[in-house]
Amino acid sequence: MKGERVRGLAVASLGVSHFRSYRGVRMVFDGRPVAFVGPNGAGKTNILEAVSLLSPGRGLRRAGADEIARRPEVLGWKVSAAVRGLHSDHEVETWAECGGARQVRIDGKAATQVMLGRILRIVWLVPAMDRLWTEAAEGRRRFLDRVAMSFAPDHAEAVLDYEKAMRERNRLLKEGVGDAHWYAALEGRMAEAAALIVAHRAVAVSRLMRAQADAGGAFPRAELDVASDDPEDLRAAWAEGRRRDMAAGRTLVGPHRADLAAVYAGKGVPAGLCSTGEQKALLISMILANARALAEDLGAAPVLLLDEVAAHLDEGRREALYDEICTLGAQALMTGTGPELFSALGSRAQRFEVTEVGGLSQVCEMGP
Image (tube, rainbow, N blue to C red; front, top):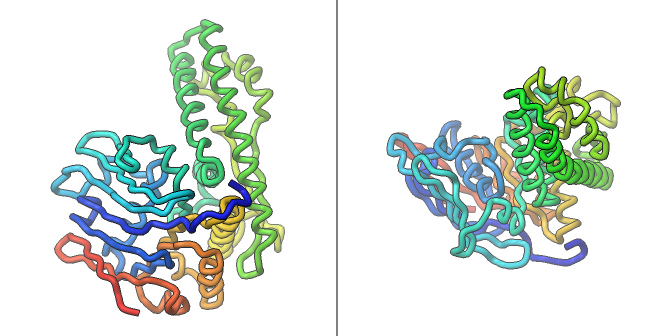
């Protein structure tokens, strides 16, 4: 809770079994930032993906459970971790059998994915997000919902409730069902979930804006705005738009159509029109703002997953990034192709070398 001091959030140990390029490996972390060094394709990102599955959702690659299992065995996969959570230590396991759904266990008891977000907060930045400002709105909504979930873990449940009810409504629309009572019931459920979704997104944008305003000048500030329908008007809009939606075969208004807009504040230029380097800097600024705001609210920074971020920064911004991570006291797991990318961290970080031999990835801790 805000104002309450809690221990730093961290993954103390990580074990993976039959996960992507790993047959089995276990790593122990001491809470400092962690640098994974190795050539492209060695398996560095796979480690970050495993950690991302300690949070709700499909992880940083948005992969299905069957896509993660190591091939050619396809025996299923498992990630196990000891974590320092918001208020206590926990043993977390998540896995999927071959052809089965992902499962979660916390301290030996079956749990939902949403419960993962209540004990640990994880924020990530991966190369695929470099297209955030130029891709379709769906990617920006997904990004915003990840941020919203970091502040309000129950946001995930609201999104799931909304999407489930909307899928049922869309099915009725496609089948040409005209029963107003069925639609009204589903639209009522959608409206309740939509009110939470819109509120959580608004809080997320507000917190990012405020956290950026309090930051230094190493990374640019983004002016953010989320375009969304008024949740109080949605129920009426759905009722009035049933005929139009039936012709389209889907629901045409609602929070599933919202978009996140960003402007490079120092230049007054929309993010989508900025250079590639400026877009990357804006993204890093927002990720740091997310971490800064969570540290203020929770008393501890989230775990950060930063995939190949350092390679795209000049030396000054690289040092500024590392300084901010260490000032926050955040455990950041980072990847890079060479140790020189992390030299500015000095003794402030653990280092692991990742290699690949015969299709198997291996990890070895490096000396200071």
